[in-house]
Image (cartoon, rainbow, N blue to C red; front, top):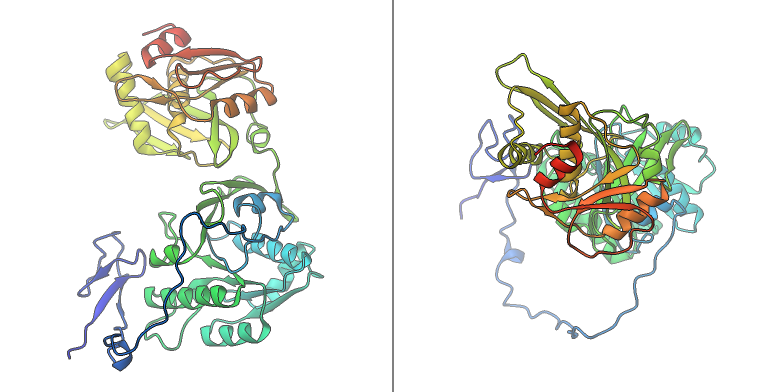
Length: 454
């Protein structure tokens, strides 16, 4: 039988039947690599010659005890994990280089080890002495964590089988190589094989395994997407290097809520958890200024108040610029189009800049109304009251749609000293809790009420 050769993109994992210089899926150059073919020996032929073991079936009404969890003591980390670390779970952590992934996981390893878990930290990118130096800077030199510097998958698994740890941290999965896979370390085949073997070890031995993954320039975890399907939890460590804030975001969690966030602050002694993110994100906010609006959002299960900043200025170019940091650029284009088509407010010939203060990324559509308010405030050079929060979704017709968890948003605003809120009409009325509520049915009414135009 002829040998079947396949090729995969090392950046996005897309498969191809032949080599090419550029990946058609992600557009990267010089990233197509040959994959080792699947085995065609007797073991891979028909399974009909040997009968398997019957599987035990159960019905949907069966009740099982929730999995036991180990709490690290880092409240923000435990929150993102769903309440603590679950045995036999596989966790994938991704983030930009230098954002603090190794620092966070070394602190977590020390906390879990102090909580009674036998913990092994395997570094494939740094020597053991470098990890010890970081531990000394963080004040963790006395933590009962076993340390190793290795990249051979066979050696790592042999060691883990002998040591029988409760928690294993692999930093990073792209540096681990399997000698039975005929491709370079970091390739799609190597990452997939290493992740599969380590995840299988976690399920077989009941140990929790944390894998650190590199990210591409688009912010996605490098390697095949199948790795994210293998693991139980996928976490992204986000943040801007110019800010001290770091966001640990859960995008997949089989043992807890997805899209939960934990907020940390980078300090000289490592990452410190932030109990009240809203207060921290608004700490640098000064007097009311044009283009500044406070948005009451929901991240996971917690309300978070952040400042939306906009700048609108005449452009010297024929094509106005649209720059966005921390929000969806396509969503900004839609808001600008609705303002022009439904409210008669043009932005042609104007550069538009939008920024979410604090380095946090907002994805929910409830920020539409706050963005529109910031744009109009910057365009008209008018400041909105400093004690007002705004939230609501804008439809293409210009109508304002209610959003979820209004009561939690208003409660968080009241707790931080805000006195009024602008929100869509409709939805669950709820209690204002002393806030002066202004309900709007459409964007035209909002423009006329707040800015005296429409």
